[in-house]
Image 1: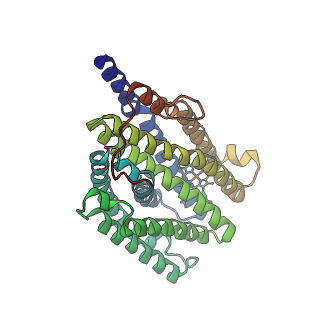
Image 2: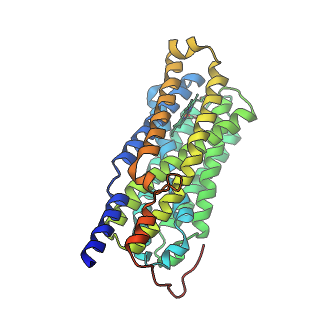
Image 3: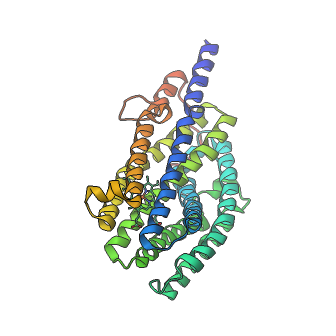
Length: 329
Ligand code: HEM
């Protein structure tokens, strides 16, 4: 009996932690779609060299790792998780993310300098605006480092002032970056808002995918206990909800930008390189949708399908005894 409970627990753990080939494939597709996005944007704005577009992509990805990761750290992980015996798991996740965040900062600093110095160094982008963007990036770097370098007990690392401020700075940096991009092609407020939403959706997605693969899964694999699986499943479910909004948001804002820049003539899309880049992005988001719907790990947690790993877990394990002093979110 004890053996079968142990086995089904392991099965749940495998479902949750081991079937992550598809999420890894999704991350590669997200990165490919972003690179095509920055190349496309550079072509449309006439800001040139492929190397600069690649560098801008690394600027966006490092921003995304920080924004999406901070959102998971201070949003999807909840204080309630600590009251269910998953404190050590959360501490491990924090340590892993903190190391990743430092790496992201190391990439963000030089890529910001290059983006500000070579891409936005145009008469169309107000120098004051560039200065504000630089100051916001400095705010993001400082707050992130204060947040990740603190050695406090895990309970005091949730929703810290520095962490929430870093998240605020990251959002502001993405919005201002979108405005700078749109200023390069002389468009107005609506175009800037649409680009900001496109970029925010992308950064939340890439950062969340990186957290899931490089932070949540290895930490969970190290200790697949019932409270850990339960906490991990709940956090993953919160991210899945975010992805349900991110996919249609990227499609709608992407199509708006494509029509705004290239019009609606099919020949433009099939007959030019930029048009084919847009079509490739449509193909990539379709692939991401297929991955999202068919990925066993994600589907297993879906309330839409009615099949849920957490429900399996409840069946295979006795209900957790209520813990004293557990906090709610
Ligand atoms: C239906 C799907 C999509 C379409 C039609 C689309 C369309 C576009 C267009 C037209 C641009 C260039 C905007 C301009 O410079 O005027 C762009 C930029 C971009 N897109 Fe998408 N996109 C789609 C999906 C995605 C996905 C799935 C991602 C990543 C998860 C993504 C990330 C980006 C990024 C990072 C940029 C660069 C923005 C910049 O350099 O300022 N897009 N997209």
